[in-house]
Length: 159
Image (cartoon, rainbow, N blue to C red; front, side):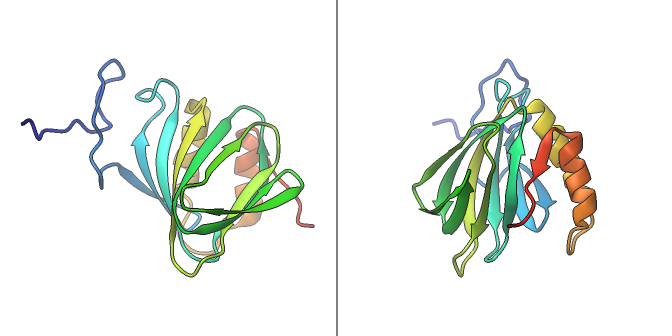
């Protein structure tokens, strides 16, 4: 039995098995992100896992260029999709199509884990690379909003 695994750094024309616990780690606004496949490796999709601490989330926002599909692996999340609010637990799939505003927040008392597929992923990947360079701690929301705008996303004003 072959126990070798290819990492997500395999060339784009080579299939790969991506082992658990592998991938580039980033801190994105307090979330722990593990990149599983960069867009050139995932047929244009950017694939990553996110561990979200209790109480943390991403405010409602909209995209002009990307769609997101998210699978809730563990935890419980409050999800905003357009004008509606839902609860998403482990096993739930979320389909966020552009340009409908969407956001989420971990409402559980344990970290929640989600798996994300962003299509197309190339521009979003660059956005995450820049967002991952922000210093730890409370985010500077005007800078965050400006970065969102640079990549064709808009953060919705609070209600």
